[in-house]
Length: 386
Image 1: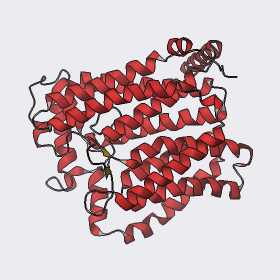
Image 2: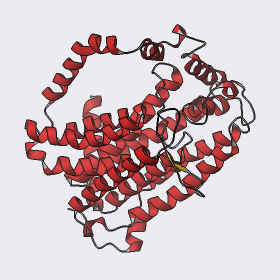
Image 3: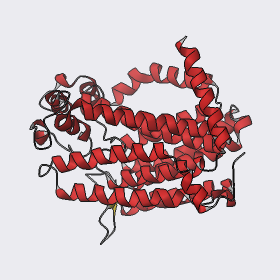
């Protein structure tokens, strides 16, 4: 049971400060690192990131105060789906990017290039979570499952047509986790995995030599240290050069020769400048945020809000894990940024919008229910330790 009709003061007092503190810590590390990397990193990157942070904080507060209970969840999900389809269609028509990719839309006079596929992530989580909730008792029936996959496939197809394969992978993982959280039988996941393993040799033969090399080098950069493996190897060197305490605000030199350091490899620059101490602070802040969001979902008492929280937590964790893997040279470089750290105005704003949604869910949970969930959470931890 959620609480409705809360006053502005009550909502303000129920703001989840754990979420606020975590996002401020990570955003502050982002702005600090971008500042320390000037002039190797353009001043525009710092200004855009600061602008996105400021607007994002305001957007989070606005969303958390909205009374979503006054509107049908079905209408919210339908509006989210329709808005996403319109936005992605505009991206295919008016989008710009590198080569054949269409990654963003430019609005004259606006300081940000809008990466539509970033903003539609939260719309995707909202619409798919509600769809999964509506069919929860029938989700293991093949026609129902196909309907959910079609729902997800529309988003994935649009993003695929825009050429953003890294973001497409994020959508696929979020889909899998939401379906699993909705009660989809494990046999479906086992079947998909088995089909993938069996078909891998066939799929591999269809890839060009260039694509095969990118995948192989992604897991072992030393196979092509002066080509595809250059970025991850330099990234790894930057992290090692920083040691535990780092080279300082004006120190370091490896980051200067690291391509796209401001986005894909800002974690590496942060570690070179401020050491693994800063890296550990970032990792802890993100881990606390992910666990907190998951616990809010569990305490929410609604299946839809639970799956929304699971989707947002998955988004944060997966992007973080892949980006750190890229920086360490153990995963292919696929253009996935680290949450609240890497440069990207659209990414930063999207994540703050997601935090606003989580805050809106949290402030409507009775305090006794949050305490009950907390007691259960720690009870399970104690049992596992034994």
